[in-house]
Length: 205
Ligand SMILES: [Zn+2]
Image (cartoon, rainbow, N blue to C red; front, side, top):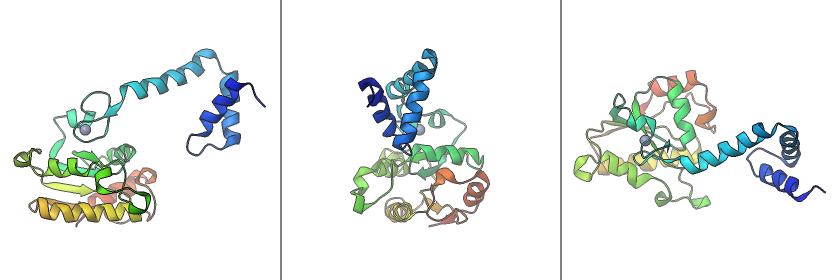
């Protein structure tokens, strides 16, 4: 129906989450009408993130160097590690201004049905960090805050980590965000007041 380059653009846009075929067409026509610099600015931004942004060597958060901004910041408390599922979950936690520790991004949640097992997540990296210098980890981790999503997979992941840490690092306190977060929802969509309260009311696991 369309010239092949236009069809290709519609197909690529249609692969994005939440974009159906009609929206993909509308976006494609918007880009065709747009100024060349504006449209190429989008293409260039996509190229730049794919070339320059990787994962932090310590916490697996997004980083444009070996370390993310939070791991690089000496004012952040290294004794606290907040565990989240995705890099996108760090932003809402930061917006609460309740948290001054560091993070650990798992890269998902345990879900045996979908084939996501412990070795598919950054779990060994987390346990190594918590194990302290004797286990080649960081010095003085006092508390691990489990901020995985309040979903079935997020809860299962939190329980698994809590169990493992009880064995591997019994001296470290393990807490979970308090309820108040909408059950079944992603952290990403929680407002900062709710998330802030959930954080300050976190409980031991
Ligand atoms: Zn980091």
